[in-house]
Length: 117
Image 1: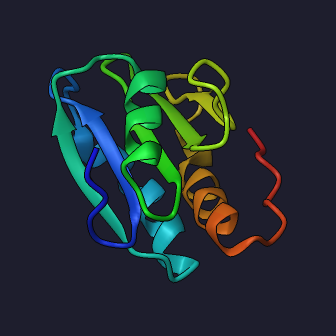
Image 2: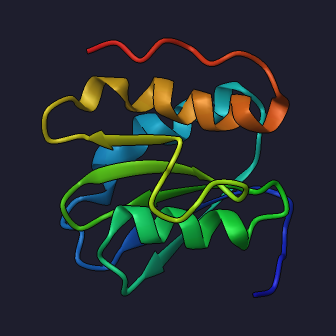
C-alpha cells in the first residue's frame, strides 16, 4: 500500500447516499489544524474502510464511513476489528464534529473530547 500526502485519510462507501451529511466531521478535523483527504471506495463496511484508510496514511489515522452511515476512527496500531471509535450516525449526527476533532487529536497526541449524545 502506498503512503502519499501526510493527512488523515477519509474513505467512504460509493453506496452512501448523502456524503454532505458528514460536513461536521470535516470541520472537527479542520479546527484541530490537521489536513485530510477524502476518497470514494467500493467497500461498504465502515470498519474496513477506516482500517484501509489508516494503514495508507502516514499519520496512521483513518476514518471510514460505511453505506449504513456508521463512522469509524481507526488507528494503524489497532487490529482491524477493534477501531478506536465506532459511531452510528443514524442515531446521533451531532457528535460528528467531536469525532473529527478526536481523529485529529489522535494525530496530535492530545486528550480526546468527550463524545456526548
